[in-house]
Image (cartoon, rainbow over all chains, first blue to last red; front, top):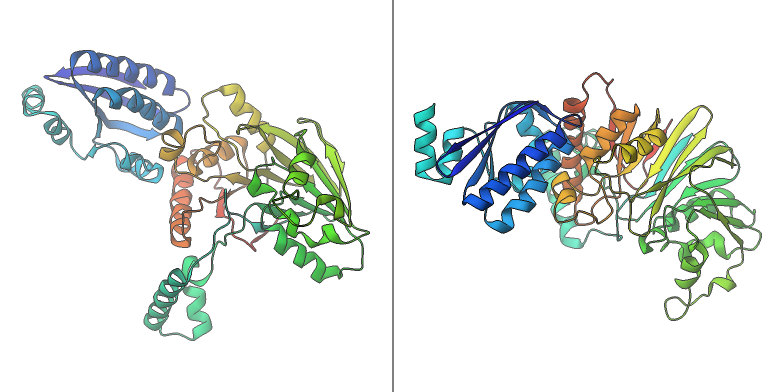
Length: 125
Length: 315
């Protein structure tokens, strides 16, 4: 699994590649915790780009939930975008789709953060 | 070996009310009208939530080991029907031995005992096995004033409390029984039953986070190669990791993952959320079967079921 972060105006995009499972969940968790901390301090929002994630297990989802518990009380929303069909199914089965705002496409997730974030993302892509 | 479910609901017994039943009859009638086939065949083609019910009795699961002695896990409200089954089979005059294995003594797991008729019949022997040192106190207390009119001391059967040690195997009623500690408020214990070359695991009221590899390995060891794992899958993963975290129950997804890791052959969802109606449990079952396919990886296909009151699994 690989994780990287990019700032688009007031949106921190966390891009993940590979499987988020027992072997990689701790690393995923650490990235999320760090980025949520930065988002809280800097008044940003988080968008997690899962377009290159082919599977997420319960421990990966748990990492997202832990980050959400850290973020929500401080006004930071974690949005999840561009899930592959299988990952989307896992989100539905786990009911995580009832907890996290989800978006089929990254531009829509960025637009939900702010017009500035969407414009910055559009300029980069 | 045969596993027979007398109570499968979590936390508190539930029952359908008149309006629920009417809705069901209407939905079933419409489906059968559309089917157009002979009534009995059309009924069989209805989804389970229209032709049957998961039931609403709390935890009570019988395990037939081939022994003349009875083996039963927990004495939830399902124990009342279990008693009727036993009395119907033998009549009240023929003494029997009942071996109860107690996961823990929260009320929904002992509340059926005051209505367990064999306890009132002299000659019967009831051995209540468990790892808690408060078993007898809990059983006695629920039949003390002002909670129940018949005191425990007036029960006619010989009732023994048998202290077990987790991680130790015992030969009881034709089975090798190994209790193991679980994660629940006040602790709970699962049981691995081995008899006739088959393995059934009863694992209810336990929370699994899969964060601690040692803890995960502990459960994998007791689930290993089981022919069936009866598993507390009360919540969705989202509930189990948020609002209901540390409530001591688990999810369907974590159950599937644990059973895959343990090489179990059959994952049986148990301790159903009492607010769920039959249609919701049917939907959870369908989703869990799909998740098993998604998560399977290199594992062979694993059977997935949702326990209902009256269900039997022959191993």
